[in-house]
Amino acid sequence: MKRLPNVSLKWPGGRWLPALLMVGAAIGGCGSGARGSIPPDASGLPGKSVSPTAVAATPTPVSSATSQTLPIAVVMQGDNGTVGALGSYVMDGQGGDSPWLPIDTLTLLTADASTQIRVQFRDGAGIGAWVVDLAPEGDATGARARRVAERGGGPAVEQIVVGPLPPGRWVLAARLFRADGRGDGVTYWGVSVP
Amino acid sequence: MNHTQFASSGRISRPRRSRLAAGFALLLVLAGTGATRAHGPDPRMGGAPWAPNQALRYQWRAGQAPPAWMGPAIDAAASDAGLSRASRAPTYARVTSGTASLIAYGEPTGCSPAGIACFSRAGAPSSFQMWFRAHGYVFDWGSLRWCQAQATPSDGCFDVENVALDEFGHVDVLGHHVNLAGNSDYRDAIVQAVARAKPAAGWQAHVFGPCDTARLQLEYDRQSPRDLFSSCLAIPTKLVLSASSTSLPTGGGLTMTASLRTTTTTANRALSNDPVSGRNVTLRRRIPGTQTWYSAGLLVSSGSVEGSYALTINPSTTYEWQAVFIPSSGDGAVSATSAVVTVTVSGCASVTCGQAPVMTAAESTWRTRS
Image (tube, rainbow over all chains, first blue to last red; front, side, top):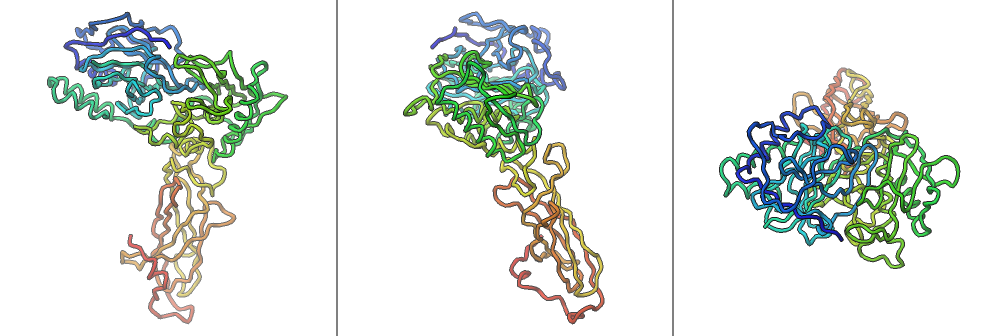
């Protein structure tokens, strides 16, 4: 079993921004599928900086050059993202199947009780639909997972926003569907909410 | 605990702008159009389809043949795929020579780090590939155990036949099913984004579920117009009623013919404008100017023309006629009602001429209101 670094998420004074980011992305995302990695200021809102604090570990930079054929997702902190663990996926006529991934195999994020979690494809591809489930840490198979966000389709967005999540330690499983129809994948993170 | 509660938890104590943001987010979350509707047909994977009923052959990859305990389970899954497809999706059979697709056991695989099995249908409509991780392969979450490798399958093992059927479903064209919140409909599909180990519900399912066959029917059509539509579908139908004559003498013979087909729409994909046979289509009638319908009997499915139903009667007076299709339980078709056809009866051609219309036993017991 391996445990990857803890990463804290907090956007003080900016709790409303993630949702606005999503609105902006939705407005600007129609009709386009993959569009490369997102720019540093993905919000399109000049003057609004997103500065994570209390970072306990160095998050993985968003990469637009590697593994673009896998529909893997990242949790964003400012310009950087924490890549999750890819479970089952399909992409370009290929794919694989995995069981539910338990928390002790996942990158553990720490989010305060007011933090909304922003998720996007690592390669910045537009998101057409999503299903996000949350299971308590003791649930090794996802049997007790609850739906926390879902959309069946619509205009492409670059990010989705989940939460705030209730206190506890959770497995967050975000299944994102590429807006261009090339595929989808379930990406897992551990999330600790004090 | 659900999404709504999460959203509302922020509304009680957060500043107003936070509440607004949560509202925006919720609106966007709920703005789906159904493209990947929960409990709908499995999503369609990209890539070329196979030909209808295409017979796909596979063999073990050289040097990576599955062990004796695994091969028969993969072959059984191949058989399961053909037997439970409820459509013209491909069939699978293993061969030992000649050109065939390849199935491999053990490393190297084309699987992602967490994958216990994987596939490629990028070669469609010519070939596919499939890989299974080896028994004992070490993942972050533990060692992979295939149930068939164990004399007594232990909890946490994965059933080869179930997982292989999932892979054959992918090869067909199936993406992972989108379950309802709480996964209450997990058993409605084999092709799932979370593989289940013993003893979780569905771990040993060996037939495609209705939401698997729904997608297979949409992409490959049903085998026969008489076959039911998957119960995971809601296929609109259209019913057209015609009369052999719209004017006839009293007591004259009248043949009412109904045509039942699926609607012509791209959403119905391969099922578009399909004849629908072998269903119960009822003929009903009413006196012009009235609202009450009376059943005139079942239209009989034609043996020669698919989707055609007919009934010959001898109306005693002028009626308005209508055909009604109500699908049986388990049929994923949507009910349909035809337009009204008026048949005028006049003059005398039989001994009943001049008598008032008689309510039959059927009329008194089967009558329905529109």
